[in-house]
Image (tube, helix red, strand yellow):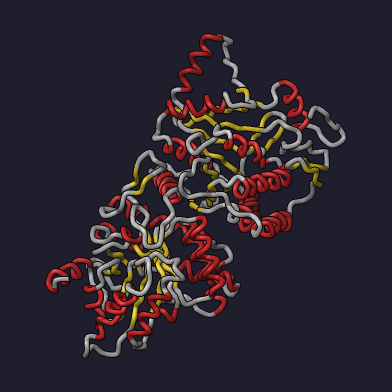
Length: 617
């Protein structure tokens, strides 16, 4: 362990080995002041030569990465793609160790910050909220890290006046003001950059030194260490390797913080934007389960940053729920979300902001909002960019816009979410102002607008996976499409997410038999993987109570399969208005304040409840 080969190592690696001779491992502690509150940033580095991830001096042509000597070369897209390909090859033989329930490991935030330092600020905020904003508990977590077996001595900062007593008093005062714990995976000191070894985190987790409440791990690909282009290539490759290990091998819950300021004075350099574009598809997305979007909130001087912190807490609260069970009950169940006399409102605006004048009134009567992705202008831009047919979309990121607009919908609903269910948050409290979202991409032949040719269906499943990454409470999945794509989506939903699956099918312009309707309900169970089933039918007339066809079929289908799940049955058009009154669960509605209905025959929640009272439903 003590042997050094000066021909292969220098700089940080040699310094790390020297420290190993003295201490084995050392804790590098940095203090940052923000808003008068002390924030503790712990930069941890493993000091074992066989495991250290470190860098050589600029004049050297090699880099030690995970104990393997590799050539240092110019950074290209293929560098990261090759890493992703290796991950894909191993994915089939490796099972994720992430568990939704009883999760007690650190959260990982990865991405690129602007001058707003978004990743570290979110890490500090999240770590504080995970312990109920208790400075004493956070200080206890810091002390546990400092006393951990194997090492990590604290590199104390010297006091300017040299007075030991004053230094001790200052330290004690600072400890009482710890606002959060951010564990940075990359650091920079006077001798150059260094990167955390993922194996050390795994070891500290196994020793229970690191846990859900002992800090948030940050992988910032725009850390100041990246500003020296001599190290950029090596840092990208090494930090990407750490992201892969933490996600796949250590099994940490990872969130991609997608920072995309919409002005040129954002503080994110063109080089950083280029770096983000190069690694997003091969590192940032594959090595994360969830994604949160940030525009200018990190540098804004208003209260918008508070919404971003809230959204991350909601997302983590959602991710840490017990996975839903088909036919189950409890907090995260279709029995609760799609319960009796529940309603969701379908938004049909091309831009979510267009709904802002009506949000306050709409939220009073509904239990969820349906986010119709196929109706968004951003969805049209997504298709145009994917096909390469429209050059005007080259400077747009419709994927980001689709996610960001969903967040905007949540933020607008938040002050008015009177019927929002209580969302447990990491055992330390509840979030009671998150109105659930039904995430839907409706295809053209099923009463929607999304193209349902082969290429369109492929993109639809990409967007449905985006719904999982957003932490949507309900994911509407049409049951009629490609079996392999459906299986892939359903497996990911079950293994790594807690969204409820609503299997659906719409029959447009054709009246079908009762037997066929029952068959569709069974199809919408998605081979026992859907938590609810929704069948919408068409009728040619209403002379013989045809408007009750979907309702009667739902009752008959419910008796044929176990466990029983909520069945939603509706009839399209004005002739189907009565079907909305007799449908007992999770009925789509309009609102009297809206300038138009999302679909013909829709009623308001007030009209439906009045109809149920009058008819004894």
